[in-house]
Amino acid sequence: MGRTATLLHAARRLGLILAVGLGVALGLGTTATGQTGTPANNVAVIVHAEVPAVTLRRADLLDLYLGDVRFWRDGTEIVLFDQQPSSDVKSSFYDYLGRSITRMKSLWLRRRLAGEGDPPEALASDAEVLARVAETPGAIGFVRADRARDYPGVRVVRVVPLED
Image 1 (tube, rainbow, N blue to C red):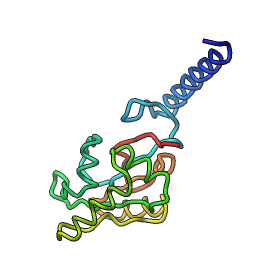
Image 2 (cartoon, rainbow, N blue to C red; image 1 turned 90 degrees about the vertical axis):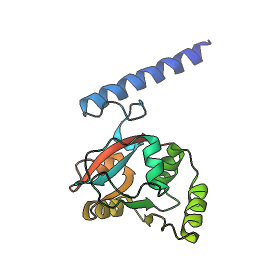
Image 3 (spheres, rainbow, N blue to C red; image 1 turned 30 degrees about the vertical axis):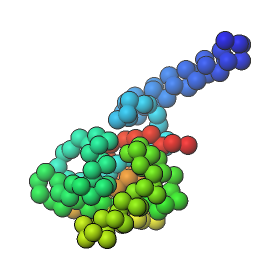
Image 4 (cartoon, rainbow, N blue to C red; image 1 turned 180 degrees about the vertical axis):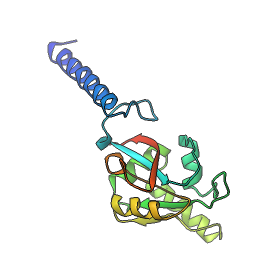
């Protein structure tokens, strides 16, 4: 390894150490994917505060956002909220689920035509998603993690990396 590569490697390790330290200091720890980072570079999956405590894995989120699961375990209907297509948060969220935005749109179009439900409502901003999830029993959505922190009426149930 050349001197430049060695220095870059050391700088990256130092950055990771600092990010871990900051995450621990802020009480963030590691994300659900095992990666560390500050809230600004993550996506938070949020639910209405009264949704029963749940642990949502990647597969669970995919089932929810495909409409395969329609009720929380207490029987409350799940209300899905989405982001506008141009959102980097939306792109990162669906990349995490292993589906492109185009693929999800196609799957929901088929479901709609088959009479199996409507796609999640796409909202214009993180602020709108936060507000709608907070006011809608059974709701779930996703926003930049730094915007979800301490927002009244919502609870973060999963944090995923925001892809650049």
